Image (cartoon, rainbow, N blue to C red; front, side, top):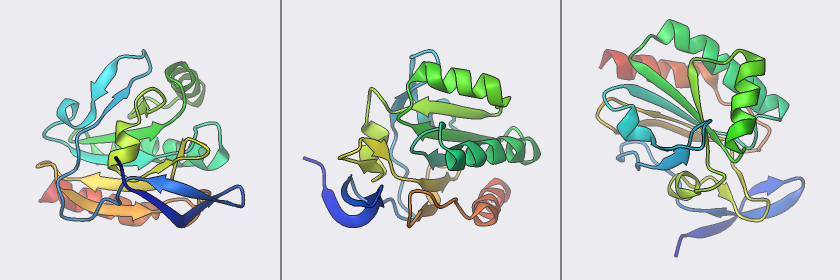
Amino acid sequence: MNMERSGLVEFRGQAVTVVGPDIVIGQPAPEFSASDQNFASVSALESTAGKVRIIGSLPSLSTSVCDRETRRFNLEAAELGEDIAILMVSMDVPYTLRNWCAAAGVDRVLTLSAHKNTEFAEKYGVLLKEPRVLRRAIFVVDRSGTVVYADYMGKIGDEPKYEEVLEAARKALAG
């Protein structure tokens, strides 16, 4: 049975249960499967092996903060180059991801759905049990699969510290 923790996050003013442990810097990044925009299962780390990964956990691309965050990382991806993979995971169903990416012009970020399979959410400590959405968090994983940056947002509406995330990714690319 997975670890359940309360008192960490509120969702719409209500305390909710977080399922899974927090990821810490220096640990191996857990492999996880999620659905791509065509409902195919993707082994996220295996499919991006050899690259630096930025992995974002999002409640839903239908929210303004998630929209802004994903668009920002899509723009940054061009400058970071081909040796980086940016994965944004939410509970949105795959066709919602496909439609949102098409409308937003997002083509450099891999959007993945944890709607069917909550493996990512549980392994990375981002599943909010009661509303069944993901807690906002961001991780950077180096080429060898080690977590070099991890940050869980204090409030679900908080954005990540973009410059810190990008600096961690650049250091991992150089290292």
